Image (cartoon, rainbow, N blue to C red; front, side):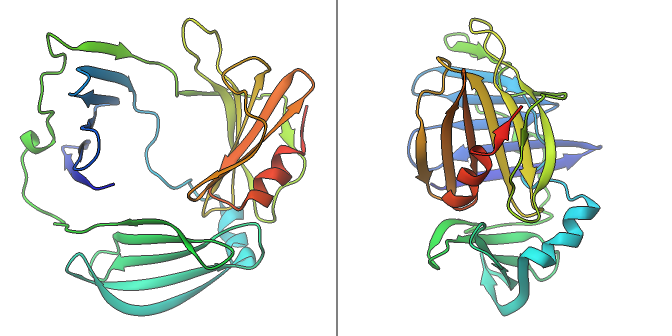
Length: 265
């Protein structure tokens, strides 16, 4: 899919606007700790807390030290992306429990311009890139404002608290992890008001990618058991006593199966 993204940093605050340019119409506004998703075709706006700061997990000193144990990194050829001079970098896994990555960065600022995820068979399974970009452009606050009022009068407004993670000790652990992975966070997801608490979640990372483990009682929203895969995301679910355990992340299917089948109290 193709999107137009505007990002403004002003007086210590970030404002973002993302507009879908193909497929169903959608506009996402992130500002002041809140996310508003506008769906004009359905006349719905969804409002939820902004629960993340960036896409990549933070790196602990242990993860930085172990990256070179699990990946080989080398400088690739120079090229051009979105009209800018770019430098490519190749990150290859040393085992079959993680994917490879090809990254292109802006030669002047180091900003990521293009990224590819490479499967164990050398196939591109995920591709993200700028087609056109202006870094440091002079834009005003209005460029990151929604097209519609905050609450359009004839639209349905849905306020959701699901998605936030209350960090705490869950009492669960994965006994087997791919080399280099360590726990990044754990806690309980906020649930829908009409369905009670959300699932427990454990997050593991090797510094490049993250794998989430969800634990919820049988009969909840998770009914599928077995292996699934969509693009770069692999998933494996298993029944454990009165629970369903699901591991998913941007790793090969063998990795999520190893993690899910080792989860215990």
